Image (cartoon, rainbow, N blue to C red):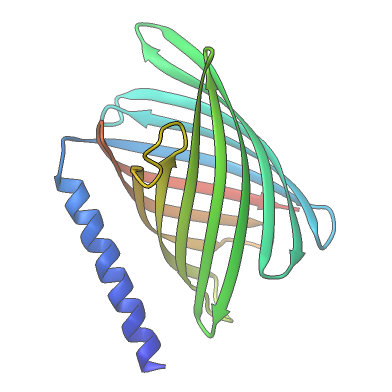
Length: 217
């Protein structure tokens, strides 16, 4: 047990160090993300979901984008989940100019649990269409959560790597996200996810404070 706790602390230290380094490596912008999620469980294997999100940018002085997502998931085993989704984003270009872009994604998620520690590994393929251009990425995420058998609060930390599939440099990290947060079961059907995300990209870094409210039925 003590070895598991030690290994977890080492992982968190490494990830937090990387987050701090990337945070000071460039000129950053402070953003906020707000999302409302609805999930309907059809049976023990299938479920459908929908999200509505809006984001603020330029140190929370300007609306960044509106987003709408619809998707579904299939869970053949308790530890494995497959998902598909479609997203529409309305982006603010400034000077009263907006543009609409589309995206689809396919994902596979494996979950493992040992006592209070929950480990989640997700691979997501996504393709975005923007005014005739397309962008293809592979997103790999590792998430560590404290998941007590009793209680409504679950702190977590995740790190996510974006890799571009549009060029030959596959192993080049196009974007990195470090995200500590806490998930709270507010009621039987309602949940809350409050987080801070540090995003590193070659163009500009972002510090993001976010809230996600979920409703399941």
